[in-house]
Picture 1 (cartoon, rainbow, N blue to C red):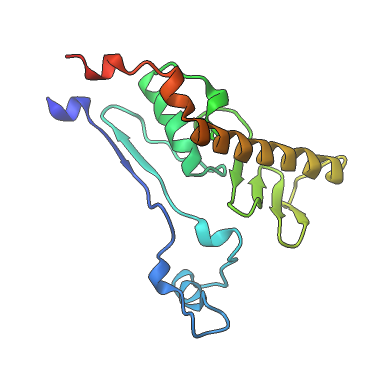
Picture 2: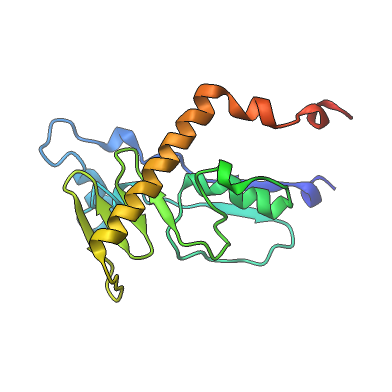
Length: 172
């Protein structure tokens, strides 16, 4: 009966670092060869997969942008756990929340397009419109910066140890 109570979650945590060619100007050319096209090292390099298997769960394909930060909220909702979603930087992959993928350098991807923090450029996806791009980008940059700041404060203060009652985890 173990399979009846087992959830399998498979995801890589990064691209294969060993394929970088430090001797070459285009250090990601091996990735280009594998993908069959030129890889965008800012956004596409980090593209990966997530597989969640639960017996009885109907197969679903998620075609919106999501990241590793979205795994915990997704599992919390799948398991029916109560949690304060404001304390996690990600969101449930199966929810209707607008996607937000954040990168360490503060670049991001939304349902509207991509923002490259190194160049300061926002590129709309084909078919998307934004009434005031500057206001939209400014707003999203604030969201991203706040999520980074909040996450750092949670770690610095060991916040979860203060607000999460773990006694039930250790009882039989």
